Length: 289
Ligand code: HEC
Image 1 (cartoon, rainbow, N blue to C red):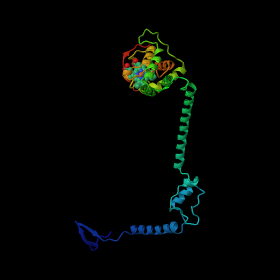
Image 2: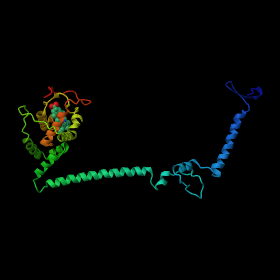
Image 3: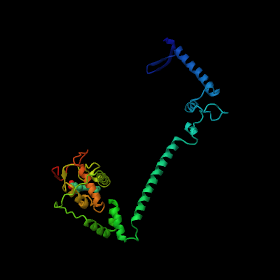
Image 4: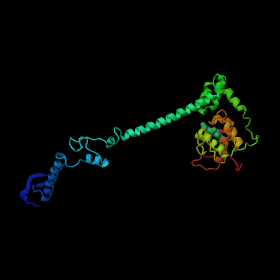
C-alpha cells in the first residue's frame, strides 16, 4: 500500500488522517465475482426457473411424487407455503390428528365414567327403592355406602337419622377400649390383605401416608403407638376414631370385615422403614407383640 503524502485527504479528525489509496485488487475481484454470481443466480432460479427453489426441493425430498401446484405456472413453489402433510392426507394437519386423538381419548374416558355410573345406579336399584323401605332406612343405607366426605354431608343434612344410624352401627361393635378383650386374630391371606391395602389407600393414606410413614396421622410402621399396638387396639380406634385429633370414626363408613382387613394390612406395615417417616408418637411397644 502506497503511503504518499499527495494521497492524503485534507480532513483531520482529532489527529486521525485519511489516505485516498486504491482498493487492493484481490478485494475488487471478490466484489466483481459476487456481482457475476448474483446475475447468474437470478437468471437460473428466478428468470428461467431452471433450478428448484428450496421449498420445491424440500417437497421433492419428503414426497418423491410431488409435482408443482400449478404445472402451467412458474415451476418454483417459493411464493407461498403449503404444508407437505396437507398433501399427504388431504385437509389433515398433524395438529388435527393430535386433536382428534385427544378427543377420542376423552370420549372413551367419558364413556367409561358413564358406564360405571350406570352400573352403580343399577346396583342400587337392585337393592332398595324408596317404596320398599322407609325414608330413614334409605338414608341409612346411603350413609353405609357413602365416602367419608359424603357421610359428613349426609350427617349435616339428616342429623337425627345419622344419630340413630351411628348408634345402630355402634351397637354391633361390642369391643371396649380396655384390654380385657381377647386379641383379635389378623387376617393373613393374600386376598384379605390386598382388600385391606385397597381400603387403606382409599381412606387412610391421605393422613397416614401411602406407605404408612405418617403425615397428618401417626406413623404406622414404627414401634410407637398412641392407642396401643395390635389388632384389638387398632380395630377399636379405627371404629371409634379420635375425632378431636382429626381421625374420624370409621365404623359408619366401613364394614366390620373391611375394618378387619385394613387393620390386618396395617399390621403388615410394621418395621417396613418407608422414606420420610413421621417421628414417633405415643409409647414404645416391645415387638414382637
Ligand atoms: C383425616 C386424617 C385421617 C384419616 C383419613 C385417617 N386417620 Fe387414622 N389417625 C389420624 C390421626 C390424627 C390419628 C392420631 C390420633 C391421636 O393423636 O390420638 C390417627 C390414629 C390412628 C390410629 C392409631 C394410631 C396410634 O398410634 O395409636 C390408627 C390405628 C388409625 N389412625 C387407623 C386409620 C385407618 C385404618 C384409617 C382409614 C380407614 C385412618 N386411620 C384414616 C388421622 C387420620
